[in-house]
Image (cartoon, rainbow, N blue to C red):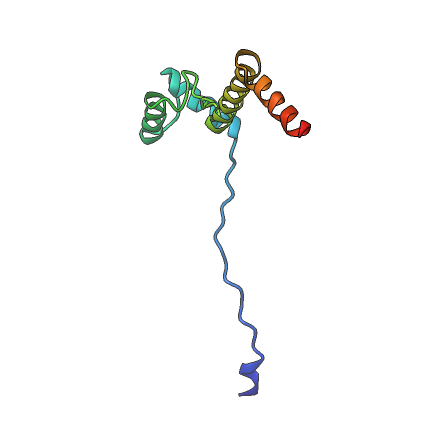
Length: 109
C-alpha cells in the first residue's frame, strides 16, 4: 500500500502537429479575393471578404478602413464652439464693459 502513495502519474501525451503560418501570404490572398482575382481562399472565407466590402468595413484592396475617432471630433467641436462664444462675448457685446463698471462701482464704495 505504501508503494501506491508515492507513484507518479505519467504526463498525458499530446499529438501536436506544427503548421506554418505566413501572415503576409494570408493578407495577399485576402486582397486577391477582394479584387476578384483567383485566390486559394475557401468559399466561406471568400464570402466573409465580400461581406466586409459590402458593409463598408474594408476598402477595395481588402484592407480595413480607418474610421475617425468620434469622441475626439466631438470634443474638438465643443472646444471650438465655446471659443467662438467667448470671442463673441468679448468683442460684439457690452459684456466686458458692464463687468468692469460693476467692479469699479463695488471698489468705489
